[in-house]
Image (cartoon, rainbow, N blue to C red; front, side, top):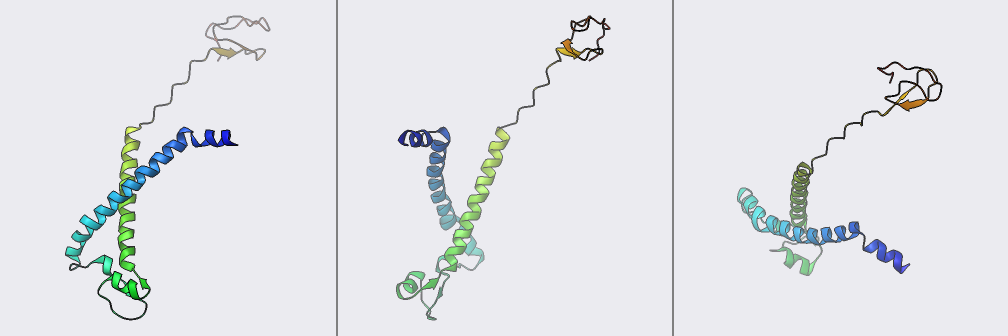
Length: 150
């Protein structure tokens, strides 16, 4: 069982997946920073300096200055955090789409190889397969036309 596990874990695809997950974690941190530190402040210029992180509903019905204050006292629905997470997801998906699109352009599909020239033909008399240059069928001894019937 250990040998099978080692074979599975050390396959190239498994190692590629592990590297992808590690890079994805770093990529997620980069996208989160991009959204929180660059895009959300830019969006807040158009939304009247609206801070998405402090958009919440306190379930006890009271008003609180910040999400942290409300969470210290009661349960909350932090829909602003959800909006930020949604923007993170959409940006991540868009960047991955662009990356895959570019990689697909670099990874051009090779044209299919032309079919090889035929090396045999069928005898019109006995229907046996014979060499394409044959002038006499080795199976039925029939004389064949020089042009050959393919």
